[in-house]
Image 1: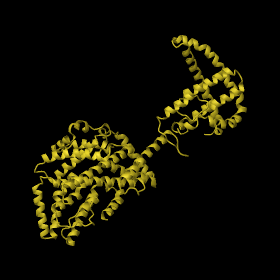
Image 2: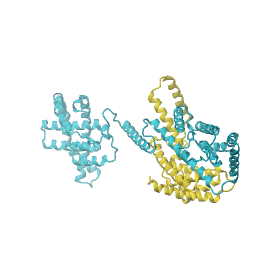
Image 3: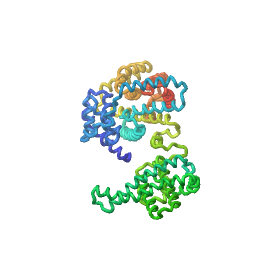
Length: 186
Length: 381
């Protein structure tokens, strides 16, 4: 990852492009929530595109944003990404196959086996509890990190989480600065 | 593995192995010889050439098992005792030298010896034993040595030519270095698993440094909890900040402005019932929209709306807002001293918002109850 300052600059440049577009097009009948949504979307896409599509989370975030229905957000994404639109909206292969094809028979059989095992094993070991807890939290983390559902490897997920966290920190910092600069009574 | 632990059976096995390898080697050397002499010869001629050499070499090998059988019984204890020290020094710990090369070099040596010292059985036999020991070692240790490169530098085999050690040095760079502690499994699967776990724990340590307040937490589950909380809080911050920016936008929706202005005036006029009304108004309109957009927003949305209304309320520190610390710090609305009734009602409003949010997020499953309680506590501090 590049030094955070340059990442922030990159992010801010892209975000400003998005915000300019947003201010140019935002119409009177826009709800406050719609406006908020547009701003957040622009910030997210700018953050993801500042990572230059090197990580799964950024790619899946952009892909998700570009698939939104309303034309405002679509145009927003296109505007921020500019000439890199085609390259970045393409999903990496690993995310494309996120819907895994499973044999129903095998799944059913394994479910049955699990049920049997549960019946047989009455006393619960502490290690198994700990394992289950970690598993559940990993699942939650997967839902939080964009594109995390398709990550099977825990190491991969942690890498992505680190990267996403750093980017989020930078994003929050830049947004804070902008809010302060805009002179809100806060 | 010590040399003293070598069983007779193993030795016999290795002997067989060695013989096979030797046979193999002979074929190889013949091939090499012919190749050296005339590399341009065609296949038939080569095969013709092989025959005389083969004749030379073969009797030695044919004799070899006879020696073994003759010497084997009486020599075994001697072998064990005398060779144990020798073997330790001459054990080739280099896994990466290719087996063919090893055997070929050994074979070549013994072949030369056999030629030179014609039929001096004793000396030859010792040499053979050495070789046999090495082969044995290589065969038995090959699995372990795949990953234990540490001994490569220290213990180099005296018998093996230098080219072999060079080869091993070149090849060992392609492997990951893993050190198995005493008592740990050394098969390739568990080693790979250990490498993976080490990598994961390294990442976790890095995350621990990254997430504030995660240093004192022991256990993977707790750390993951903290990480999840932090990511969520950051995401919520982004939501909140974008909401704030939406209010700053130059084309502020006049309808909403009027609406909230009216609200404000009403709330200043008569204190208590408007809060109820406000919440009632907020719930059907904004609340549902927020639910549609994202449920995590609820609390932030409520806060924002109240913010917009600019009610002369002091935001008390005890409000269980799900927003992170900055928001609480940034609240500076203490223009007027609010009545206590207001405060209570607002608190309850926040509470409901927060509870709703807590229920709607993914934390609803049972093992997260403790976590929720913890965050509740944290918020109320």
